[in-house]
Image (cartoon, rainbow, N blue to C red; front, top):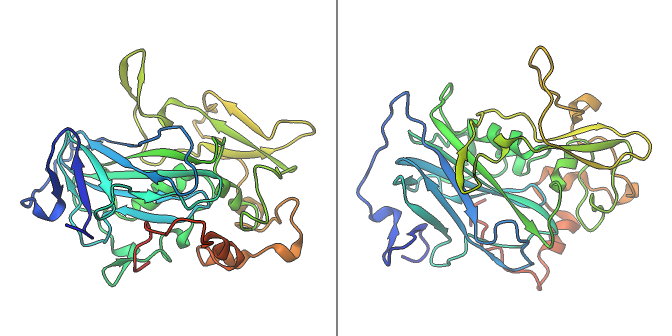
Length: 329
């Protein structure tokens, strides 16, 4: 059925549209918490401009599913369901592929180089999309103002909490990165928490690093919940509100800009170090980026979820069509 969201159950010849299934409902027991895994067709291998990205997921129990994409510039789009009113119930124990109508790609790479994410959320009960929809369509102006800033684990789980009922705990998530051009240690939009947003052609955080702060990357196991070690599947308890994986610390002298730490240190009172945040410096995005002339800064681009010279460059003829963008953003 062209134009409608579709799932493919791997290993079967038939293709099922969501609308063709008989209505089904997940159990609502207080002990019910479905687990979800999401992955892409290339794993950690980088994509090139214009390449198709195929997205798959599996829930271990019958559940409702929402899947988001965050591009390398922090822009948020919903991959599934394509519209808020469409059915998003999935059977447990099956591998599903997210399709864009009759196209086998979930989306095409139209990002500048960097690290983006695919974020999956599952719940025992239907999601409540009221806070992020308008007129039966997704309203990206109210989804993190169209763009997330700072740590992706914190920003996306905060967003997930907006689509589940208040106080609800029977939900789960998974987060997988995708890379454009090459592998990177951190997403560009991490820097927008402190620095003023400037489009990629004018400021590349990977080339002009900050001299005031450095990035600490924590590799705690719970950031990689469903993984295999020595052939054994190990599942770590995943907090619904994780601590940031990426934090900023003061940078001294010749310290490396990026430091990887195997585990988060825990103080005696169990409080976690969240590092320096934009709010600690007087507000989000108030520090001019390094190596950028003042006249080139375009803070309004971030406010509009992308625009100005940055957006015009994104729409060059040699870029793929924006097939992942809904008609009613």
